[in-house]
Amino acid sequence: MPVNLSQTRHFARLLVSALLAVALLVGGIVLPAPARAAPTDNWQCTPELEPLLPVALSANTPAGQRTDKRTISLNCTFDATNRGNALVTLCLSAPLGNNPDGVIRQARSVIGNTRVHYALTAEPGNVPNVQPQVLDALSPTLKPLYSVMIQTNGPGQQTFRHQFKLVTEFEALTSRGLDAGDYGDLLSGFVVSVHQGGNCGPALWGPPNNAIGELANLPIAANLTPQCDFLINRKLDFGTATVAVAGQKADGLLTLSCLTNLPNVKISMGTGNNPATGGGPVTRQMRRSDGTATIPYLILKPDGTEWSQAGSIIPGTPLDVPGIEGMSVPISGFIPQGTPLPPTGNYSDAVIITLGF
Image (cartoon, rainbow, N blue to C red; front, side, top):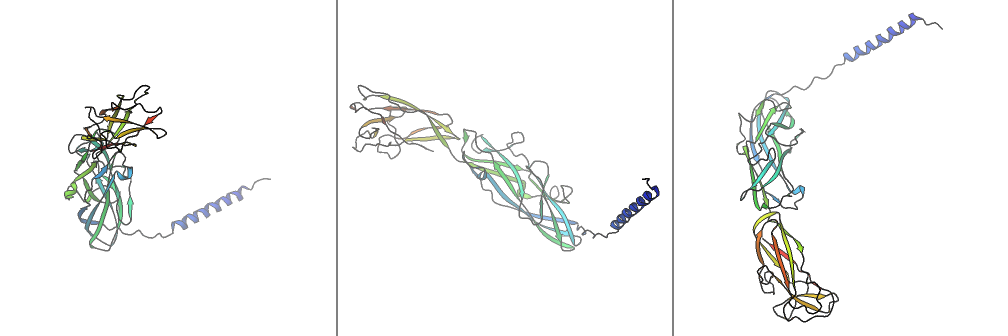
């Protein structure tokens, strides 16, 4: 069937004219006018900082407890030129501190030279209508923490409270041989500033025209709990006796594993599971597996004197050694002369070792 070209062109013209009509209709829609911006000026802010509480650290401190969050507030006044909305942004920068390892911040022991790493970030505080911005970590470069739309009531002086939390997170302690006690760092040149608009452009308040006073030198603090543990490298084993047990010796070894260096660690030996009650000088005993017979024995310090715990009925004193990582402490066992040969069987005891510092 032949196509009527004139009809086709007429349909096309109608279609185009309909589309143009719609476009004209849309173009004629009246949109509401945006709210007028309210420029602000003459910002004056008074900082408030929560007291510094040192973070308590140990080898087993979980992640959530290695973090300090200090709230910092800026109580501000400013002048508004008219009623409306003003977008302002809070920006922060922080130096690397006094003890950096490259770009990694470190707190240093106040009594030595050992150090622990920490990260410094921030998060918005209790601010209405806050719009958080991405801030992975604080750096010496000024970065925005958040923007906020402030509604002004009209021309004249207004008030606003900026607030954020400075987050200090210390690393998990995997290094050994650290100094126990207080650690610290000082961030000299910490900057807080308020800016017009959504970035860190010209400052409404902040350096160089406005100083944050004592906030410019922010201290960082932690306390490392004294901590030592030990490994039993070789237990006391008197071996097998067939003729006599009197005079048998055994050599053991324990090694200190210290998170912190300590000038002195006091090692005490418990009385064991089978202490004698006869009042004699020997009170530790190995007991046969069926519980019917015992063998007395001594635990001796490296100098040959008997090893006991403070307040024990066993003569002797605890052993004092330097609390350093890898410190090896030899232990000796001895079955006293005159001990009769007991019935055959397996004899054993368990002694609690206590470290004091």
